[in-house]
Image 1 (cartoon, helix red, strand yellow):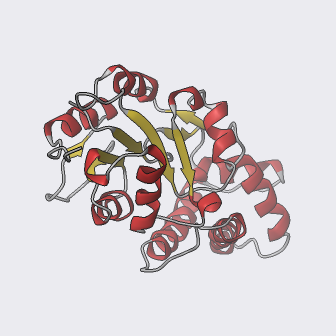
Image 2 (cartoon, one colour):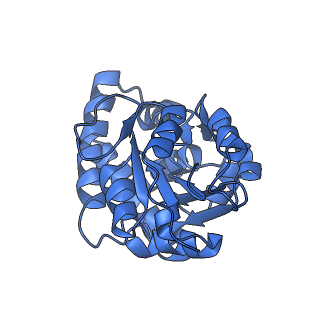
Length: 249
């Protein structure tokens, strides 16, 4: 039997950008009359990415708990790229254009395996005597994620959508995962989290008592203490294989 609640991360688990951040940056700069080579763009992206992940993984990071803080984070991120490329003037205008393009509701699309995986969960029975497994998305994202998921055609598959900017909670805080379980009326031991971040998704879910599967689409994960899947279908199969002992009613 599958868990009563199957939770997914959103970005880079169920949905992906239609353009990479690097390609989006190059397109915006070209539209503003700046021709920057791909190698320079890549170096600027790498520098900003290093800052981003260092900040995201800091203990107690609350940058994803409000729209204002999330926007400030992205402005700092894109500002670092522009600094690296030598664009000091008109940064505000350029960053406005970059954010409007990259974070619009149509800038994201489902992965090719997403809808089939969600349909698989909905077809699969959960614990005997329970209704079908419920699906939740738990994501560190701005409040626009609701529009993003709707534009991507995924809203009809979801029972719950928990967005960090709306809830005032962010992964890996156990309270974020416990909130999803409470709203679903499911014990944490009857829930599983599937996501692409070991720290945010795996450690966060486990700290709340959920099972966890690490989604590693690129095959670069080095963690050995968690089931690792390359596809969503494989992640669901692993969830079935690692099903926790059901709690007594």
